[in-house]
Amino acid sequence: MTATDTTPQHLVTEPAERFVPIQTRSERPTSFEPADFGTPTGREVNWKLSDVKRLAPLFVDEETEAGDDTGIDYQLAELESRGLLVESTGHDAAPRGEIFLPEDVVSAIAWKRCANALHIRLPEGRVQDEPVIARLIGKGADRRSNAHIVIEAMPGSEGTVVLHHSGSAQYAQNVEIIVRDGARLTLISVQDWEDDTVHASAHQAVVGEGAYLKHMVVSFGGGVARVNPSMRLAGLHAEGDMYGLSFADSGQHIESQVFMFHEGVATRGNVLYKGALQGTGARSVWIGDVLIGSGATDTDSYEKNQNLVLTDGARADSIPNLEIKTGDIAGAGHASTTGRFDDEQLFYLESRGIEEEEARRLVVIGFLMEIVQKIGVPEIEERLAEAIEDELRLGAGLAPASKVGA
Image 1: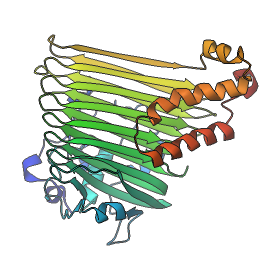
Image 2: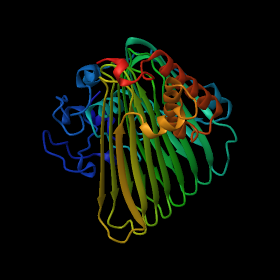
Image 3: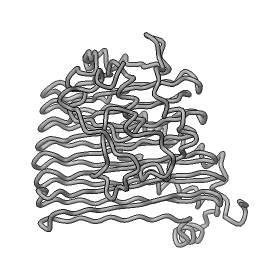
C-alpha cells in the first residue's frame, strides 16, 4: 500500500522537513507519509525527552496485522448495545481525517497501517446517562498493533467515553476527537498496561461553537506510555479542560506532550496534570504548550503541572510554554512545580498524632485524588484509588528520603 493510497486527497500536505529546528508547537510539520519524518534519533524537539530506544519497534513502517488477527482485543459490547459504533472502511471514510494530521512517524505509521478506523459516534441531541467503556486488551508484548480511532460527538449530544487499555502490546494509536457545535464530551484514556508494554498515542481534538470537551489521560501502567493530546478550541465560546494523572514506578517512562490551541473568540481552557514518581529509573515527562491565536480575543487560559517525587533515583521533566498572539484576552498563565513532600503538611499531620508513614500516605493520596475526583466514572475512580494505594504499599515512596537509599 502506498502513501498515495492512504492519504485523503483533500488532506495532502507538503513533505515534512527533516532536522529543522522547531521553535513552537504550532510550527511542527505534518505528513501522512512516514518516510517524511525519518527515524527519530532523540535529537528532535518532540523526541529529545522520550525513551527512543524502547519506542523503536513503533518506528518501523511495516504490516503488523493480517485480517482479523490483531494484537489488540477490542471489547466493545457496551458501545454496540447502545448503537454508538459506525462502520468506517478505508482511509477516506468520513469523518476520518477531518481534523487529524500526523505530527510524527508513529502517528503516520498508525494512519497508514490501520485500514479501517474504530468510529464511535454520540447521536445528535441525545444524552448518554451512563459512561461507555471500550476495553482494549493487548495480546502480548511481542504483538504490534496500529489503530485509528474516531470519537465524534454530534451537535447537542452529551456523554462520556472511556478507552481502557490493559494487557501487553506494542501499540501505536491515533485518536481523532470531533466535538460538534453544542456538544459536551468527556473522553478518558486509561493506561493500565502491564510493565512490558510500549504505547505511543496521538490524540487530536477540535471543539466547535458552544461545545465542551473534558479530556483526561490516566497512566499507571506500561513500560513506556507516551500519550500526546492536542485540543483546538475552534468555535465561539468553545471550552476545554485537559487533565492528567500518572504514577511512575522504577523503570517506567510516562510522557505527555500537551497542546491547547485557542483559535475561536471567547474560548476558555484549563490544563492540569499531576504525577507521582518512585523508584530508581522512574521517569515522567510533561511538556505543555498553549497557543492563543491572533483572532482568539477574550480568551481565558491556564495550564499547570505538578509532580511529587517520592524517592531518590526518580526524575520528572516539566516544561510549560505559553504563546500569545493577541493582547485582547481575559487572562492567561502557566505554572510548574516539582518537589518532595511538603514539610509543613507533614508537620501539621504529625503534630496531631499521625505517624510519619501514614502522614506521607495521606499527603500523596490528597495530591493525586484532586484529578481522580474529576473523572466522574465511579468504576474508574475506585480502580484508581485502589491503584494509588497499591503503588504506595508496594513501593518505597512512604519512607523518608534518608531511609530509601539511592
